[in-house]
Amino acid sequence: MKDFNKEKDFFSLGALIAFRKANNILSKKEALSINKSGLTLGQFAVLEILYSKGPLTISDILNGILTTSGNITVIIKNLKRDGYIIQIPNPKDRRSSLISLTENGISKIEEILPEHFSNIKDSFSDLSHEEKKILIRLLRKIK
Image 1 (cartoon, rainbow, N blue to C red):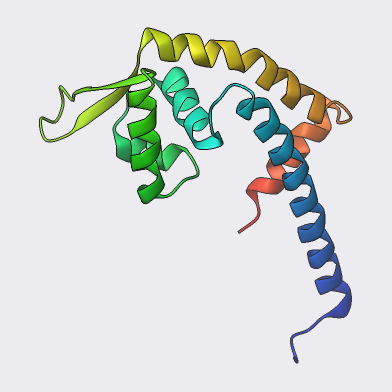
Image 2: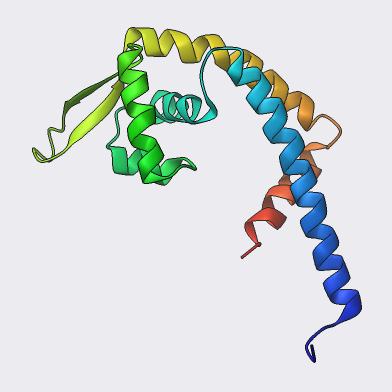
């Protein structure tokens, strides 16, 4: 343990613990809100990215949300079953298809988003605009 720097490593560990605690708090709040709608976090993430970006390939969805390729198959299957999304031919590549929201999917995400945004706003309400900008900049530096 030659490279161990007690003071430096102590602050790194403290930062990690604070980050994990904050992440757990935010995740629990998000899960409570979204689960009330009858969706899982993964299903919400898919609906949200399709709502904000439009029709996407499964690969693009995977790159935009935090889930595994095995899990995305189940999420897509269940969202199709529930009538929130459809699969359409990809006009740019016949070998693939696009996932698109249905009217039912648009209604569902629009029903959830106001409370979701309100929860996010509430979670960060003790931070000033400038502190939020600093937080974003600092978090982007983590490797």
